[in-house]
Image 1 (tube, helix red, strand yellow):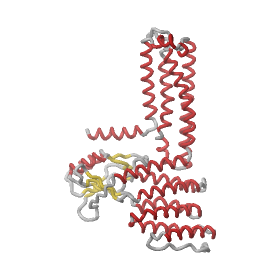
Image 2 (cartoon, helix red, strand yellow):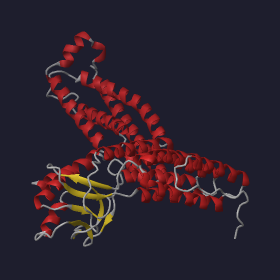
Image 3 (cartoon, one colour):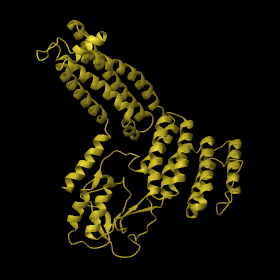
Image 4 (spheres, helix red, strand yellow):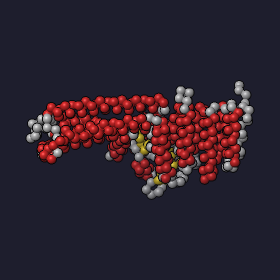
Amino acid sequence: MKKIYSKIRFAYYYIVNSIGFYPTLISFCFALLALVMLYLETLGISKVLKDDISFVIISNSETARLILSSITTGIISLTVFSFTMVMLVLNQASSNFTPRVIPGLISYKSNQRVMGLYLGTLIYTLIVMVNVHSDYYGIPLPGFSIFLAMCFTILCLGFFVYFIHSISLSIQIESILESIYEVTREKLKNEIKHDGGVVLERPGAGGQWYPVLSSQTGYLQSMETESVLELCKKYGVVLCFEQPLGNFIINGIPFAKVNKMLPDAEEFRDALFVHLNFYREERPDVNYLFGFKHITESAIRALSPSLNDPGTAIKAIDYLTDLFVLRMQLTDEKVLCDKDGEGRVIFLQETFEHLMDLCLSPIRLYSKESCVVVLRILYLFRSLLFKVEKHPHLKPVLYKEILVLLQDADKGIMNTSDRERVNVQVKELNQMQVLQKNLQLLSIKPPAQD
């Protein structure tokens, strides 16, 4: 039963976040509305309304068929055109930014609702159309139902204008970056909120730990927390994941460890994998690490010679600055406790040092000759140094990253005026007196090129 329940939960999450969820749901509601309206027609709703508001009731069969045929043709054309625009936007986003932003664009609920309105209106119109002059009714035409179809069509035209506006905004890199940033920021805040600071003995720190072999190959993205905690409590073990969630695991290779030998290890593993979810999409709302990666990849693509858009890279660095400030508050290890408050699951998260290197190394590679981007990265470090006093163990990490940045800038920036501007920023960092050692200034004369 638990296995079936877990599969249903995963299927529900997958369906809700698919592009077809809202269109399907709204279409079903419109089909239900059409059936309800046809039932009311059998009760004579059109006849009653015709006496009071005759101008909204269609009484001519030729006019009714012409209206319904025009609505059907128009809505089909509108739907095809809108779907084509969505595909073009996704293709452009994949080409200009990074393919991994596509799941986020698809998940825009507003666009899905517009598409659902189109499909729902089409289905409603088709159901009403096949019932025009049906012998089942005691009136010639379902006039009020036809009037509603006209109202829905006018509504579709209004929302089509909104759709054009929305899709034109969603393709802008500023909107994409901001949406990724907001989702990642909320995910990080949630992680910080649930970071209880509990510390458990980790593998390699003493004691005997036993590997758990993977029974699948794929990207381990998420798990059902309550079910896994209950499972670990049942077997009386502490489970430690050797890699952060989102990493690729291979069948037959250890991916986790438990703190005691289990006579029925395979049974435990099979029960564990029932509650683990594998899929390829990298969604920031599931793992904040993906948000860092998406913003970084957008900055790298903006710095590529094909786009040459340092302004976008600077915005990406600004967003990374705030996210790094939040990440400083999070420990490198996450411990989940059961209902009795006993630690049962250990997640080894990406360390702050590795995360900063993962994001800044490629940006440094593409921007080491750009003074504007280098100055913005130095401003990033300046912001982090204001916050690092509460996290003194991160000072060596920041010092190391600043040194690496200055080494690349020393080799890449040849203009003496730009080198002086970099030195001004370095002097400001030294004046903060946060780092253990002062940073060396760049020589005004650039080094000789090999």
